[in-house]
Length: 121
Length: 121
DNA sequence: CTTGACCTTCACATCAATGTGAGGGTTTGA
DNA sequence: TCAAACCCTCACATTGATGTGAAGGTCAAG
Image 1: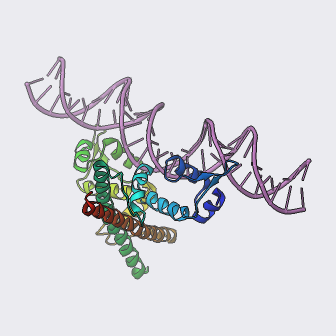
Image 2: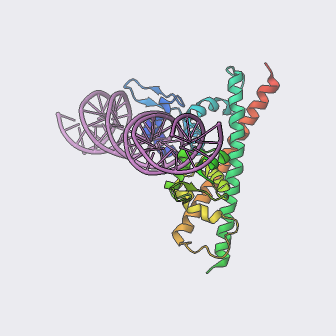
Image 3: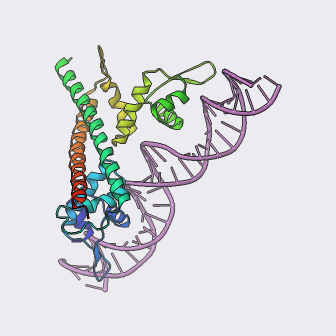
């Protein structure tokens, strides 16, 4: 599919799809006329990228992390250098603390909303 | 305490403490000489702010949300306008989906790390 | 063949969160 | 009284994720 369709299917501005490509997160092939050609599988990948971005990961990290997240990562995760593994561990830990913080604050908001509602003024 | 101490106790650059003030997230009083004077309670507040920022909330929202998160919110949450409540609900929901995404990806990384370790190459 | 809806690249703009440094006052201790 | 270590404001720089617009190629349908 071309960029317009992918944009619609993922709710992502064309601009950003080009940006993600520039950042090495996806690399669509090109048609004879120069138009980008996207594999349908990229719909999910783009959505995942957006999720990770939304969650605060920079594209630089997402690029490293993405290959590890493919479900059938199958035969070879060849480039798992020690530094890379360390990065991953560090990031996983950061994600865990983020989850904690996020959860705590979400619950606080929730509690507040509940109180306001029952206090009904 | 003054800005230097708060900075150390929270691991936050002075610059940022001034920035948070500029954004209305905290408002220290001033000593006679113009120096900012911070209440010790602000240590926790600043840490909380950093947590929320780290988690992706913009200062604008944090400013709205913070008052609701104070534990002894006590007698009056007076300015709970309907729009504000709606914002809070929306944000709470976004936080929930963030938590989901974050958890899923963290687990995927975790799983990957485990696999790499056992596969021990 | 022209029009409209696509696509391309390039480049400048914006926004939030930060970094950084200049220029200058204050406080504290040797 | 002088230096070191604070503090102040102001203001410009940067980084990452985006918005936006110009200038132009491609293609399908009328």
